[in-house]
Length: 205
Image (cartoon, rainbow, N blue to C red; front, top):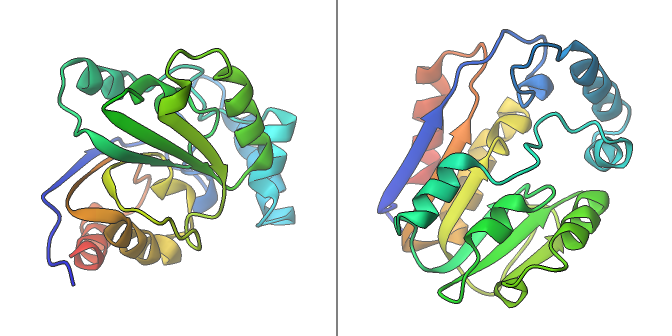
């Protein structure tokens, strides 16, 4: 059993108070009420297929339309580990393509068929196509044949219900190599950081 992760980076950003855990993934924008309400409606009507509906209808305010700037910076400065990388909840796949290289094979994972379809389409002309792959799968039940040197989580953690966060931590622990690195960009919203931070760290160890 692994007893530690060599490195765990967590970047925490406070967002505006939102009404439900499912809406914590919504970025702070000048007008987020309509996308937030639509996301709530889609997820509550179909908890399993709601994310796919969001992509089908284009209700994806979390999608930057480009790679995450801090990830690009880490890649360009040679800070990211080489080897195998995983991006759970990869969406349209910008982050996957941005860090893929001959020294780093990247797996983009998403439960949404429409998200994977869009990611595949957007990356079809990428020069690094042989260095990444997109898979439609559930992060919590997916069983890869190899472990990862890096996992990058951009708002995937805060998009799941609080009661599932310990499972998230356990899956991260199981998918990383003993000396692997986890980088997260998460939005804690209204919750007190101390409570869930202690719980998650305990599950990661």
